[in-house]
Length: 104
Image (cartoon, rainbow, N blue to C red; front, side, top):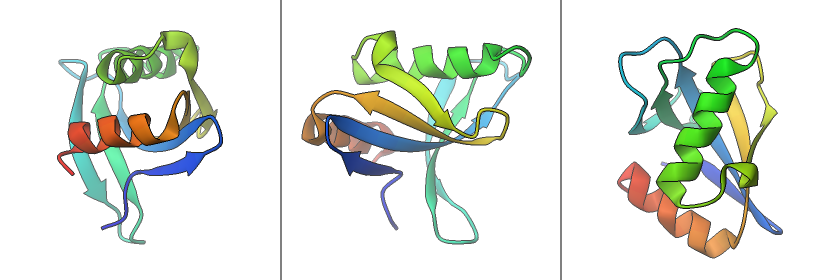
């Protein structure tokens, strides 16, 4: 199984499958799609209107990884369930934190 992220200079790109309108805000581990790509599963209570679900996702991931909310941004998939988040920081430390979150 491939990791749900890609290392970059100055951070990582995290691949997420978001489910809005959930009962709780939470991260649920990693799933692998039919094409073999891995995604971190996330649920947020926010509705997918006016970017509310994306903002909730950014806050959730920032809190889980211990980085400021300003360090997390949606760079692809703004209106899709499958998103790419860019997280600024030390790539190796972020990779370790994501592995711990995803049970890897």
